[in-house]
Length: 318
Image (cartoon, rainbow, N blue to C red; front, top):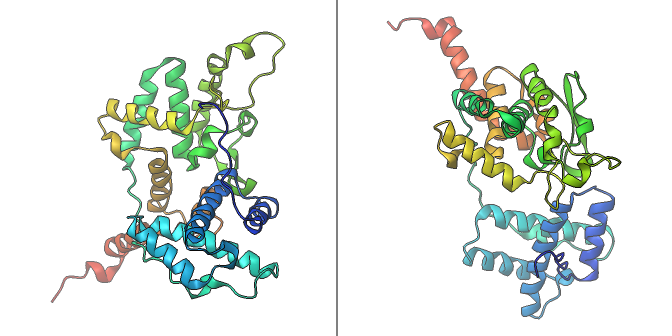
C-alpha cells in the first residue's frame, strides 16, 4: 500500500546488534544502515537456502554467495560493496567474541575497473549557470541557487537538498555542511554563490507549504523547503531540474547530474592548482584514498607545467 513505511528486512540477532553498533558508535547514516541491512539480508537468505546460518557461515559459504551474485550479472562494484558489508559484520563478531575467526579474511574481492570521473567542462558549467539565471522568477532563483551551491562547494546531493537554512548565514564566507555520520565541515562560499543564495532567500517563502505561510506557524528549517512528504526538495526532483536546464543550455541531459557537478567542482579546483588534501576536506571524504580518484587531473596538470615551463622541455633536439 502506498504511503506505508517499508518493513525492515528480518535479520538474525547478531546482525541486528551489528547495525545497532554502526548507528550508535559509528554514526552511520540511515541510508548506509539500509544498505547494510539489504546486503546482510540477501546473504542470510542465500545461506538459509543452503541450510546455513549467516553468523556461523564459513569462507566456502560466502564464496558461493559471491559467485552467485556474479552469475546474476551483478557489477563488480556492487559485489564489492556486499563483500564490504560482510567483512565489517564478521569483524564485529570477532571483536565481540561471538566468533573465533573471520571467514571473510580468506576471500578475494572482485576486480574493479578504475572509475574515472567524467566532469563537465568549465564552459559547460558556465552555460548551465547562465541558463538558470535567465529563467527568472522564484523557480529560476531557486535553480540558480542550487546550481551555484553545487558547483561552489561540491556538496553531495543529499547534503544539498536537506541543507538547513541556518547553515547559510548572511554575509558569511563559508557554509557549514553536515555530511556522512553527522560529521560537519566548513566549505568556502564564493561571492557568486552568496549572491545567488541571497536572491533566492528573498523568494523562498513561495516554496513553503501553504499551512506554514499562515500566521503563527513556524517556518521550515530547510533552505529548500517543499510541499512533499520529505519537507524539502528531493534528490529525484533536483536531478529532473538539472536535466531540463541542460536541454536549455544545449548540453546532453545524460551528461548532467548533481554527482557530475560534484566531480566538476573537484576536477576544476585541482586543474587550477588546488592540493588534493584541501579538496578531500571540502568533499567530506574521510580517507584521502577516496579523493585519489582525481589524481589523474593532478598528473595531467604537472605534465603541462613541465612541458610549458621547464627549460629542458623547450630545448630543441639536435
